[in-house]
Structures are given as C-alpha cells and as structure tokens.
Length: 262
Image 1 (cartoon, rainbow, N blue to C red):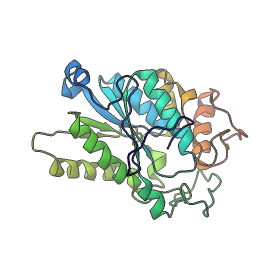
Image 2: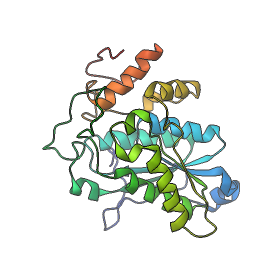
Image 3: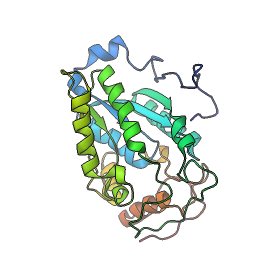
C-alpha cells in the first residue's frame, strides 16, 4: 500500500519501516522514555474502528506503535494515507508491511477484481465475499512479532460485534485462543495481551466512544470499493453511516451517496 509518495522497498518487496520522526520503528529514545508496560502495538487499517482503538489504547496509558499492512485490497492507497496521517497526528512509530500473499491466495472481493463487492446487507449473518481467509491471524502474528521485538505488552485490534457476525476471525473466542498461542509461542519472559476492546460493541458504540475521545474521523477510510469518494452502499460504508446517523452526527468523509440506514 502506498500513497503518491511511494515508500522505499527492499528487494523482497517488503516496505521499509517508517516513523514520523526517526525513520525507524524503534529508537533508543523510544525504549528509554517509557516502561515496557506502557507500550502497545495497534493494528491500524486506516478505518474508524482501528483509529478508535488507537485512542482507546492511549486513553489507557499506552504509547501506540502502529502496524499497517497492505494486502492488495482495492482501497489500499487511501487506507495507507489515512493510517500514516493518523500516526503523524498522534506522534506514533509507524511500521508498514506488505502482505501480498493474501491477495495471491484470493477468495475475497477485497482483493480479487473478478469478485464483486456486494451491496450492504446489514441483517445478514452469512460470511460476506469481503472476508479475507484467516486474515486476522496473519495480521496478529505480525503484530505480536513487532510487540515482542519492542517490549510491548499489548496488541490492540478494533474488531467488534458486527464484524464477528460475519467474519469468523473476529469472534471473541478467536482472540482468546490466539492469546493462548502467543503465550505458548513467545519467550518465557514475554507477556503480551491481545486487546479487542470493542469486541462486544456495535459500530454505533465505537463511534460514540470515538467522538468522546476526539478521534479525527476525517482521517479515516472504510469503503471497500472506492478511494474517492466512498461509495456509501457497501457493507463497510453502510455500518459506518448508520453509526453516525444513529448519533445524529454527520460523517466527515465524502460519499457518492448517503442512504439513510437508520
């Protein structure tokens, strides 16, 4: 994922680590300024849920280390730009990793142009075509590596209840099981918690919490289809618009259309 100013990559195609201040994911300054218990990796997609997770982590006293991944999704450029802008806003270390294998594996309308991104069906409990097979396990594995390497004691992910109704790797049981994997698969002295603070919340609950925390939602992007403007009719747009509409607040990003989802 890259914006108009492409970040450097190595020969393997993996983008080099970037941070708003130092150009490296971890510096001696960062290690010295805070105790390990005050640092957390946050999986930052560029969307509103992960942005709220950033501010939730900071509200709990953590210094956030951003991990953003590109996996060939349709809106990867816009998502990267939003994640990077948010990192600059909060002064966070920023690591961008490309995970091309998820696109090569396919089977998701987010990465396969031959599969259509479906219109929103907010009442469906079926696994949608936008599901990227076992994506969260891939992302959490990288996040735990990043956390262990930097002495972090938590990994935050913004998954929530309306996600796990359709995405099996967003269920509370998944995160509990993955935390057991972390306990078994890291160094004896490593203690990393998997934090999914919104896992039992609705999108409206998240938006309300984010407004309370002054999350800059104008710096986020949720649309599955388009990088400008958001379509307003895919699942991601629909849940987002519905949340703001229920709260009586206008979503600050641009949409091609704004259906009433209340």
